[in-house]
Amino acid sequence: MLFTPARINTLEVPNRFVRSATYDGGAEPGGIVSDWQMELYRALAQGGVGLIVSGIFHVTKDGRISPVQNGLFDDRFIPGLTRLAQAAHAQGAKLAVQLFHAGRETHRWKQYKGETASGPSALAEGQDPYFAGACLAMGEDDIWATVEAFGQAARRAKEAGCDGVQLHGAHAYLLAQFLSPQANRRQDAWGGGLEGRLRLHQEIYHAVRQQVGPDFPVMIKLGLADGFAGGLELAEGLEAASRLAALGFDAIEVSQGLRGAHYAETEFRDRIVKREREGYFRGWARQVKQHVAVPVMAVGGYRSLDLIQEVVASGDADFVALSRPLIREPDLVASWRAGEERRPTCISCNKCFENLLTGARLRCMVPMKGEALNRQ
Ligand SMILES: Cc1cc2nc3c(=O)[nH]c(=O)nc-3n(C[C@H](O)[C@H](O)[C@H](O)COP(=O)(O)O)c2cc1C
Image (cartoon, rainbow, N blue to C red; front, side, top):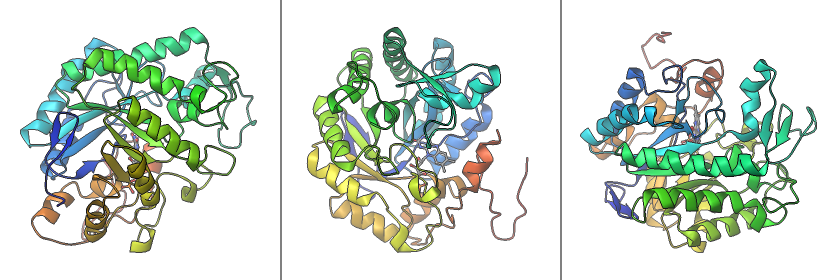
């Protein structure tokens, strides 16, 4: 069943494996697709996943986390993305672009320039235990410019020949910030109850759909609940998923919203070495599936082929997405397809993530058996 096709809107995805969006720190400075990224995506496509979701592409010039992150805020990014889509297609894989705005998380770089980040609500430094900086509240004009930027970025993705877009609505970035009552304290039409906190998602959906037309897959990775008490609760996350599916989103990948302080309170939990620790958002995916009529992608610690099979066969999700195992073994799915029923050798130590934070490119930090780590 895992190797049967499934549809997302008009797109036929050849199998049920998705490479979950993974930032790689490998763009050319300025955000253009690099030759190194071409090789990375070629290997992923050759490695057997049906759909690759790209790493985060920032839709406004400022809404980024790093200068070596891919940009999509100008037409000059289209040629590089066209090459990336062609590389995926040449190996039979589909490519969706993850559209991203960091919101208040831009403080990571803005602080060095003496600038202050913007997010849903103003915060002084130290006011929020789950956010390390200070930020200003986005004004009405800024919000509408961001909505328009998502639409234009989606147009560019389509023009580049990509197969879909996925809004990043999880992991403490802009959309997760707006949805969370912890981060969004606004009293205007962009805050308050769920309707207001979900308005940005809805306006972005309309702007994107207007640019790409009815047939192009528009997906969202949605944080169903925050990783700590007092933030977004599951009941509201489920209601948000229902409303977004009813609005027209073509698929929902189920993940977490804001992050807590420890890996156990994040979307990338560590030490997934036993089957019992795998699939830690499976219950959320199952509940989303019960609320929506569009395809659901499960993500979060999937390692065992038989568990992935069970998740899809039981109807808890239509697709299963993987990130960390494919950093180490991009050919994992192809080897499963060839009948090798082995566990990935990724130990979910998150050293790949910690290394990215130093400005380095994505790689597994644990040497392969018998290999010295290439530190290039
Ligand atoms: C190094 C690294 C980079 C990531 N980058 C992104 C990203 O760009 N966008 C995103 O939605 N999630 C990102 N994630 C989260 C993954 O897509 C995924 O949701 C999470 O790691 C759990 O899946 P896994 O257990 O298969 O790794 C990243 C995770 C890691 C470890």
